[in-house]
Image 1 (spheres, helix red, strand yellow):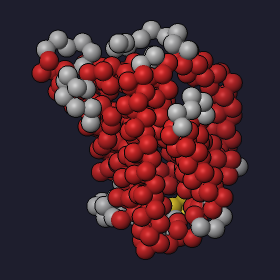
Image 2 (spheres, rainbow, N blue to C red; image 1 turned 90 degrees about the vertical axis):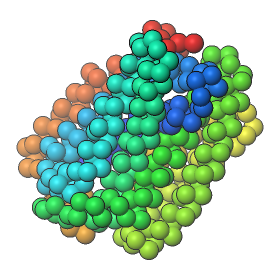
Image 3 (spheres, rainbow, N blue to C red; image 1 turned 45 degrees about the vertical axis):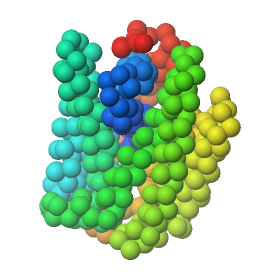
Image 4 (cartoon, rainbow, N blue to C red; image 1 turned 180 degrees about the horizontal axis):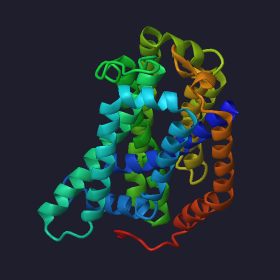
Length: 334
């Protein structure tokens, strides 16, 4: 039963990486769009793209934390005791990002719009970096069982820095691919070309970072490296092929398939992490079975998850479908 709970947990992590990641990546492009005049049109497209769904995507983060502390309380305790600094920074960034995005729409003075926009954009980079650093700290075995690890070296280390930088690159790439499609849906050829160029550039950068990361993991996280190059290798190859396929479609200006392949590439990265780490919840100190709550608790969570699949997930699916069809009220529409 603990295996089923771990799978349920990782489904949530993967969904948040793909759906929430695209939102954070949109904030990255907002940050680098330029001044008020030069960046006006890209920001309009970004607002139009994420406005209807950006709050809904945080449901996955809440879901992940609920499942983690309910099904694996020992791991939750150790992670939050050790990595409370990056987790607190991420929480602060999420609040700052949401308030910045919302208030930018209602203030009237240009200076206020610029300040709230900067808060939204900067925190959109801070949050995925911290999340990637947390993942790096866990995967490299720097979170001990049952006590607090080092509050600094647990997330300021080679694997965590790699995780943070790679997370920012990946969400920026994913968002640029999504924005290409959204720009095409708006009939804006200039923005299609604008975001296509950035999607190709970030795909190359992400590939370089991943390539360098192989050497970093070999030197700093040998257990994770061994897992990625053995049992998780097929998933790693799938991620690379999907990313390469998406890049080819972008270069060829194909209108179909690029978005799906980009999402598959990102999802496969997260799944590869889980497969490589299995069956450790905290590598080197705690297995999934050891971290699991009693069977009664796990069963109750699995039943609740099944009910969510029936009653909540269809509503989320409908929301995303209506958004893609352009049938939702728009926020910040151009």
